[in-house]
Image (cartoon, rainbow over all chains, first blue to last red; front, side, top):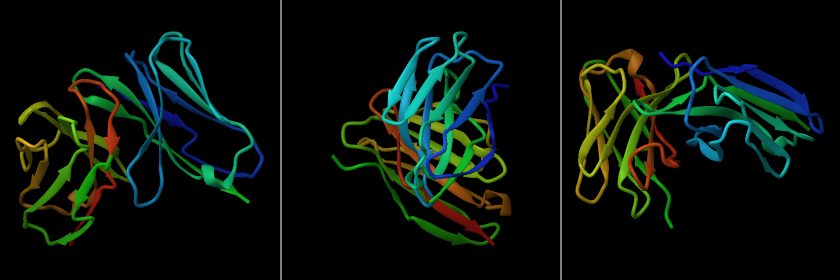
Length: 110
Length: 113
C-alpha cells in the first residue's frame, strides 16, 4: 500500500517566520503535487514536480522533489496570514490516480 | 473558463438512505475523478471516469458507484448510507486520463445522521 506521510501535522507560527513541510514515502512516484486547501473549498494545485532533485519556486514558496522521487518538501519564507490552510502533497500513482498525504494544517498568526 | 462545479454543496441524510452527487467538469475536460475527504482518513480516491467509462477504482465498497454522461458531467451515488459516510466529497477534472493536472471543485459536504 502506498502511503504519503506528512510532517508536521499541525504548525502554528508567527507572521514572518520560515517553515518547512515534509512529505515522505517508501514508494517511488512519477510526479508529485502540492495543494493548498482552505475551509469549505477544494484543494488548489500549487505545483507539480516530476524530476528527481527538481526545485521549483513560486514567490515565497520553494518546492523540492527528492532525488529518488520518494519524498518532497515545501519551504515557505516569511510566512503571511494568507498562507494559512491545509497543505497536501499527492503522489501520482498509476492505479489510484493520486495518493494524497496526511496533510499539514498551517496557521500563520498576524 | 468556468471551474469545476458540484451540486449540492451541502446535504443532510439519515442512515439507510441513498444520495446522488453531481459534478460538472471544466469545459473540454473529459476525465472526472471523485475523492472522499474525512478528518480521520484524509483524502481518498474513489474512482475515475473517462469517456463515460470507469477507468480506475479505489478501495471502497460497492455502495459507492458513479457514472459519466456524454457531456462529461458525472454523478456519484452512495446507497444505504452509514454514519461513516459523512465526509466532504470532492470532484476533480482533468483534460486527459492518467496523471494529468487535476482541478478540484468546492466539494459536497454530506452529513449522515
